[in-house]
Image (cartoon, rainbow, N blue to C red; front, side, top):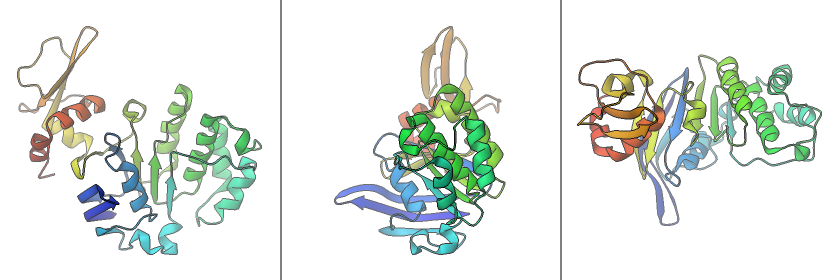
Length: 276
């Protein structure tokens, strides 16, 4: 489990994160959402120990990530959005890097590469953006780490590759994993991310499971506007709208509509989910 308490971080005089409190539990694939500039990448790099909290603390099973503890680093992988195109074949690159992760499996890497339809004999600097992204995703999953942090992993992937990515995340992470995926492409990940974390400027607006969200909010796909809707958007043949679930009804959570509803009703959202 990862515990984030009263976390703050600034770049010069630009306070990006302030008073961030989060609990990240095992066996979950968290979706980290937010507008540009709210600190999603900064939070991931803090979790990965690449930056030091200026205020507050982060502990992963009692270990502070920035302490550079070998035990934590060998059981954590951070996949950034921007990837270097190195002059090496994918297979030899992965084998040479894999020695730094105790549970790395080259056979697993090759299996995932086959599922992604990427040739491990191809050089990284000769790959397309999508092929390079899939190679790094394959390596990240082959490291079999408990903590996996991914920044926009579906950027550059075509539609079949996004399907393969979702399948691989389920197949190659375990019940003890803590996975955090930052994304703007919520439709790419709608069926795998749960719970949902929504960051705003310097605060967490929401950190809740899909079950908790559907218990508190109702997602209506009808043709009549609800007078107390928190968010509505016209679609072909009707509306998608979100309002408080006062009658305990079941509905399918639409993450894009959820995000817009939360941003339009920040204080109400924090009140609704304050006890979760």
